[in-house]
Image (cartoon, rainbow, N blue to C red; front, side, top):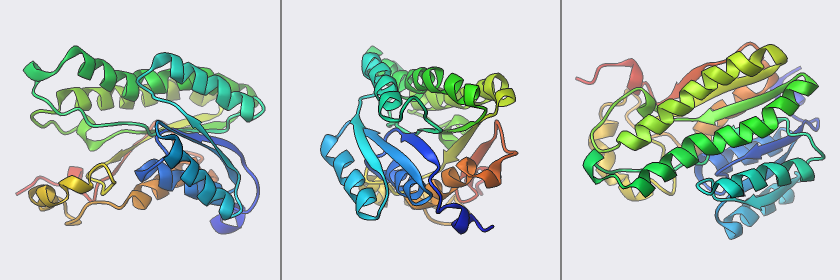
Length: 256
């Protein structure tokens, strides 16, 4: 049976954080097309509603739960509400919500530090703690953490962003050890430069960076979403604890 044919059957519930735009939005659309009922989550209620409308117009099932992952109480509420609307079962979790924190170390405020680690580390940790044990009880599930090649490549002025994404990558490995034997697959997707609405303003300034990428361009959000989709699919059933770079070859070569 082809992947397309497999995708026709209903598959359960998927929670995608940060799915009102960019990679998360494209992931939500693809998972809905694959038969998942999708919980669209983000800070912007109007944009979440637009994604839900797109999915339902195309014949899928979706609903919106707004949440700011820098608010710990809101993350716990998101986990509770997601389980409630899904009937106690979430089959897929995509920890995609994120944001850039760009400042020299000496200019990094306590708030900047806390927000980066709450959104990239604590939020995914709380959601996984709430949902993964239930996946394990049922004998299966998939979690994809959306990291960054910055977890492996250092640059000046982004220490907190890089450190938080590196921590998320280690959580993937820890959760693989913890939940993998019970049927829950956990993996990381590490994008390079992606042309998202958040990055669009910097497109022109990334020319020198793009010249270091063998593909000689940034990624479109759907290109990253397709890799997330694959890792969730049965075709990736033997992939666990992996960190897959979707970066046009940037981390594979030494810039010359």
